[in-house]
Image 1 (cartoon, rainbow, N blue to C red):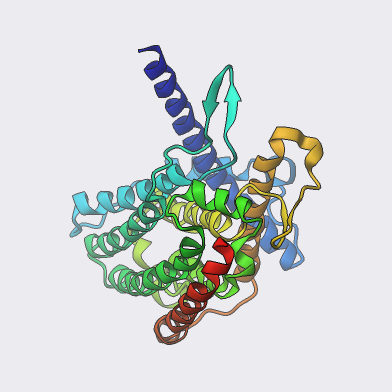
Image 2 (tube, rainbow, N blue to C red):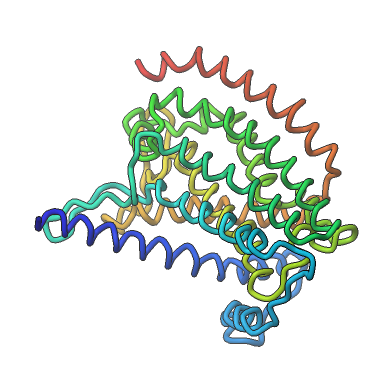
Length: 349
């Protein structure tokens, strides 16, 4: 009975930490993006609310919460609100299978820094990711607005196209690791002394492009297309409901998919890798904290890369986006799978 209580306590703490970090960090990533964009464009960005604008996300949140909650007269209220739940909940649940570091011990209790280490963790990730289609389709349809509906159909088409691409892209690391468990995939890279990005550069590039498309980031942000659709499927949402969609799509989802990319291609919490030889840890002086710092650094670098692209590339047309998925990305993943099937026995040996 005591062991069960300890397990439940550990799980409860993990849930609170994940929710607190993910949602709190998601809000502050809006400040990070504004600062990065400002420096790229040689301007200071937020500077007034708090030191260097650090309290700006709190001010923005307060503004959105106190705004009037409007609702389109001919819309479907139940589906209109359900779309928000279907967008937020699956995006946060992805972090349940993200391993943040190696197992450690606290007061004699062994703690694995992952909420649930299921043996089909990656299947769960992409099952939850596919729920986004329903959220966006419902948001556009329930708003009873042609602009919202066009935006949602554009986005749904992109997500369906790139869900196929991203699924085939991750097959390479799965074959090399021989498991669908996110924790075991990292452990296999450590055991094999090999980050999978060295053998899967094509899969990594395809994964990153698919991540940009799924999260509506430049150059794949046609569903917002301010000049044509005035923010697309969120046009009939106001106040905090309007703010939650970009918070989930642009920040929580990007963070989740960046964390999965680190797990699949960059060795998770492992330090710098020399292929097949071993690892070099310049942060050895941090002791047991070093693996967690490496994981955070890798995720942060991928997120900053996404921001850099956002303020660098032009927007593509919807036909260019879908053609790229089916005619370029998908064939590349097939080629990568054939090459992986040849390489895998060498890695296992």
